[in-house]
Length: 317
Image (cartoon, rainbow, N blue to C red):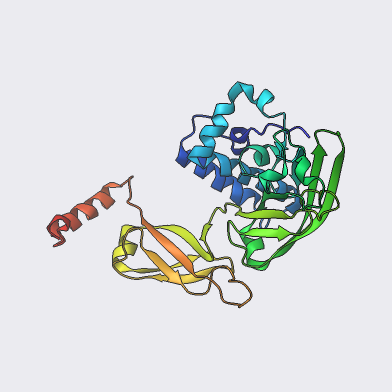
């Protein structure tokens, strides 16, 4: 089960010298193009959207990007081994939305249990071989779009395991239910799909950690959804009515006069569901006041007129 190297820079269509802003812009452009809700060929778009998300998950995080860049020319040697569990088994996932390469290097996937159950070489400790014991639990990541987190979904998952000592391999196929309101970082337990039991003991469990797919328009904080939007200086000073997208469709939002840079406007009950109560988180619009940089002569004259006639003195406040 070797891992295939993923060229994340090529996926986003950028160079290795790209800045953080260039990475973000490239992701947003591609994410809007291939978002499954808007693309004509949904199957092709869904796969492409996952690839784009995985690339941005790594390159958009400075620490992960540094780790990725250190693989360098030696990636062919570094990437030939799947995740090696401490129970003597290697394993990899299918259907989680992440490639084997990501699972191996960036997901934090693990196989865990009591370290006393095993000798350093990975074989069961002789003192514990005589009684049944539960198998080790396995943990990995699952990529969930915000639309899936809003409505809930069921995902087919494949778990492949290979025993390093016997050379035997097994493939497990099962369905995982992602409940409505699944927040980023939530762990979904799949009973009995972990490591095999020892001496007739029960199998361990599989835990899949929800990772919200990066969205070109939204980000999340627990059950709250945040949308960032640029506004003109006069909209901030005078107020305005604008149209903003939400997960439920576009809404009209009033920007109050005197709005400030980085101010957040709240729309109650437009976030993700909270458990089974039917209550929902909130939707926030984060304002960024953007200044014009390319002025015509007429526009410059108006700004100069405002400067000469305004009583506003920001450094005297």
